[in-house]
Amino acid sequence: MRTVLLMIIAISLSVGIAESAELSDKDATEILAPSDAVFKAMLSKDYVTVWGLLSETSRQTIVKDVCTALKRNTRICFESEITADLRSGGPIAKAHWGSYLGKFDPKTVLEQSQWEIGTVGKDNSEIKITYKGSGNAATLSMYKEDGIWKVGLAESFWSLK
Image 1 (cartoon, rainbow, N blue to C red):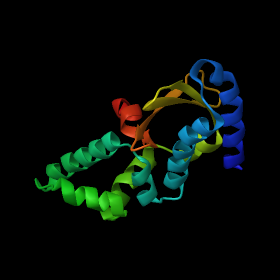
Image 2 (cartoon, one colour; image 1 turned 120 degrees about the vertical axis):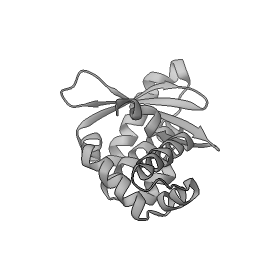
Image 3 (cartoon, rainbow, N blue to C red; image 1 turned 60 degrees about the vertical axis):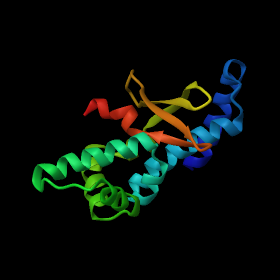
């Protein structure tokens, strides 16, 4: 159902945006699909998929945040080991995402929010997500890395921490 809705949104948005940004249906889908997928993966607690959909900057930010938290307790952190655990969905990934999802419910983004494509550039774009009844949209930054759109989770929301 969400996929059909995304396709309808992508087509309708691309019609309105295509004149100014030359955004095709394919481009709109390529931008929207990873963002939809990351929230679905969060909802299903598929942390390996979440990690794979994040931008490199988001991944680096999360690794540094985890290391900062670990250093408070153990004073030891090896970023390569943290990265490997987050990539494989290990115990640190489960703890990190469990904590994150204790404060954020991806279901509200998936089921109770309106999505619009905002600014679109060659290597970055924005998705405006407005929760029902809210007058303000949250901006989800997307980054094209190696030809694939990635979700800038940290770039979008870490300043709110």
